[in-house]
Image (cartoon, rainbow, N blue to C red):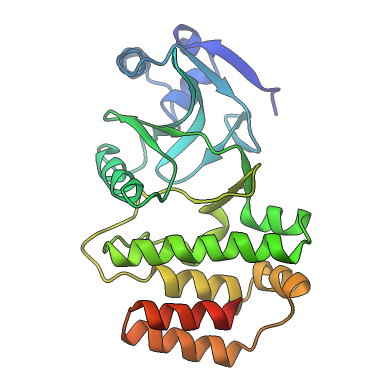
Length: 252
């Protein structure tokens, strides 16, 4: 894989950057149009760095809808999501709307700007939750991070915004360098379907068959899955603060 590269957006006509800008295939006219689109957002420089890869080039993230790289405006460093040409989505406006709604309750990276093909938001410099858990073995730090995640999910439930992907939480939970957790990637979020943020995240963190429950129990002590399941059932029946507090106590 190529080393990290920082370059002005005018150089995105070069390969392999043109391919990433119009992933998965270069289209010269589309490249030109997208560079103009970036200029309207105030982006003057981009950086290809990260633990994921696209076109043999490091990127922050790569998903079915978009590729995420670093972008620079005159004011700040931001995360730039680039819509893939093969994504099946016509634009990134829905994701932007869902992120903005999450921001009203202090959830998610801060929204910055959106166009048809690009979404700019706060760059979270940190690790995926599983990696963070592996590298931190402090019980109180675990409790603080997990409590914060659960509170964010409660807030999402209360405003009727379902993230939709928290059962696949490893890709959607980041912990920054200060130990602050963030729920990211609202591309499949909805205000139309029944919310299941708290139940989905608890299943993943404490009940699911993945490495995260093991990492949590290793540091915090093993939890009674039956008690957690019962608390989840009660919360699912009636999403009120009392049932949520009981669930918190059972999990933590």
